[in-house]
Length: 534
Image (cartoon, rainbow, N blue to C red; front, side):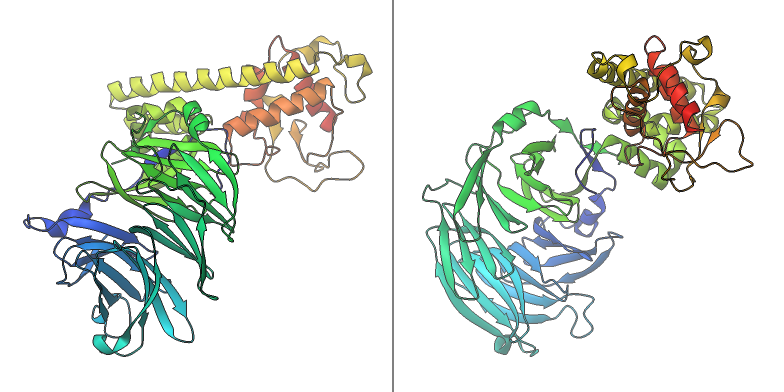
């Protein structure tokens, strides 16, 4: 889903991941230490060296990949989801076949022993030499390990040193032939095809800060919530200061269906499918639109975040203690829609009653429609019916206020244009046109006939007098009809952000005419506009 809406975003926790801790019940000695997420799997490393594998969709336990080389510090699944690499605190890199592989599933495919703790892993598929996994260590070394097709681990691991950097490696990302390496002091861009690398900038950064690719552009986190925008050659294009955008944003709690951070920078950056960039700092998770330099989401998960990963637009957050949460950055109207589809109107209404954040920020008719649909389900629950009636009244008032504000803005934009000088449709001085239209006067249908090029709407011979087919007229800017159309389209976007603005329903058109007009001006113009379209 693209990040473009008039509504603010919330972190929606639509499913609970508490069940992932079920295999550890009764085993107080075992703790989760790190995780990775792929399209099929959620894999979690432990302090005893094992890796627990879960199905990402069903969240069911699949298997354990055994290990005996100390606590697991990082995990990485290859793009084909056939192999998983696990790095350990003792410097071992173990490569296993994923549980769905057709042969030697769950067996150890490769093993390499290094002289320092493994901090980062990254896969590359090389058609001519099998698969390579890039390894970054606490000693600042970057190496590659070749994983062949032989089943004997000792014979299938080939270690090749690549770089010796200034400080411990904390993250690595591969994009095409460019390997992005983040250390505690600098970022490096390595062209693995021609074996050259470039340091990004000359000013060091103190501590763990992230970096990521966003298309063909690299973003490197800097202290003070700044980001460097960097070309693949390593040249810094610009510096983005996100502190002003953060000052304008407001932290919002996680909206779960089941304070500003003290840290000085984004610890990790993760690109999202819709074009945004996710990050975390301290106990806060952010989603940033880098194109607009805007903070779309700032939410506090109330525990220090240890790691962050993304699949599509789903964020997986691991907090101190190893607990995992899945969050989705969604506007409130989309949350209402998904809750309605997944759990029905009654459960969705209960959700709205108990989650004021959603109803306070929702700017569409969806919440009101769900409340009205759910009322019959609570015929025997007077208390819930009273809550829903109160919530419905609040939602109606808010929609009416939004509509009036939008009309006022549109009216002020054309106040200086006299009606007599406009070239479009003009408001007639009759009393019939100045009155708000009746229910029968305005009916739109979503199945419209194609537009005609002569400027007239096409209607069926058997259509009712009040039915309008097609949207083909274009009123002149500045005319009352133009004002009415602008208002109608703007309000319809507020009511149904995901629909096309010209697909007005009868209910929405009536809402515009009855509640969005001041002194009958917009309502009368809209009534005339409809009559001209017939």
